[in-house]
Image (cartoon, rainbow, N blue to C red; front, side):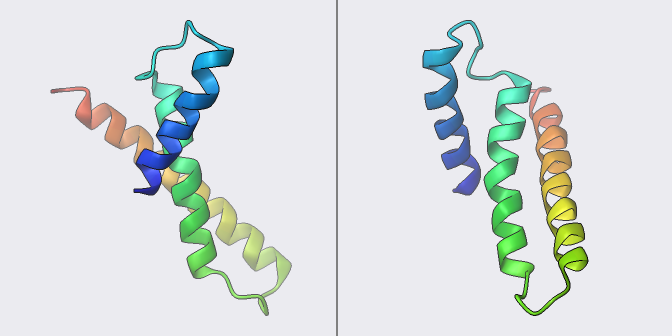
Length: 80
């Protein structure tokens, strides 16, 4: 649900500002779906008492993992 919500929010932002970008654009889909998923994974994992460096590494890993997963999913679905 987070991925679809992020994608729809990305579409609502991009369509009025850049009408030439299609809704199935790879960058639009991967960034708009990976951002809320990475944020949710990070927020589910983090503890307030941890060191700042641990939180930063965790945030980077969550966002990069979500981006990688979104890119792989986009290319896997492209074969349909």
